[in-house]
Image (cartoon, rainbow, N blue to C red):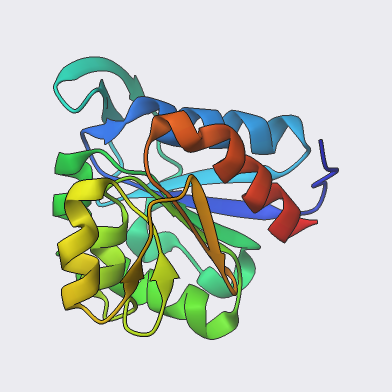
Amino acid sequence: MSDLTGKTVAIIATDFFEEAELVEPRDALRDAGATVRIYSTGTDPIQAVEGDTTPTRKVEVDGTLDDLDVGAVSAVVVPGGTVNADRIRTEPRAQDIVRQAVELKIPLAVICHGPWLLVSAGLARGRRLTSYPSLADDVRNAGGTWTDEEVVVDGALITSRNPGDLPAFVKALEDALS
C-alpha cells in the first residue's frame, strides 16, 4: 500500500450511490494516509445502496459540491449506482468539478455508472474508458472508445466497470497519487 500522507481526495456522490464504490476507495485511501472528504448536493447524510435497489446505510458528507475547491485536492472520485449517476450527471456543478479535474490533470477516478457524468460533461470524446456495460453505447455516441477491462487509465482519467473491479480501481488510484 502506498503512503498517501498529505494527499486530499474528494468523493462526489448523491443519494443511492453504490455503497462499495464509495466506501472501499474511501477506506483504502484513508488507511494509506490520505484525507478523504465527501461532497454532495446537500449537507444531509447520503443513502447507500447495494445492487442499485437495496438500501444499506447512510454516509455523512463533509460539504456540498459548491464547497469543493478542485484546485485544493489531489484527486476526485465518482462512485456509481445507477440513480446516483443519473442524478449527478445533471448537476452543473458536478460537471464543472470533473472538467476542472481534467483541466488540472489531477487523477479523476470514475466507476460503474459514474462515467455518465463524463458523457454529460463532454469529457468522453477522444478518451479510452470503461464503465458498466450498459453505458458502452453512451460512451461511443459521445465520441469515446469503450473497452471491457477491469480498469482503464487514460492520462489522469481512471475508470472501472463495477464493484468487482474495486481492487484494480483502488490500486490504479493509489498509483496515480503516489
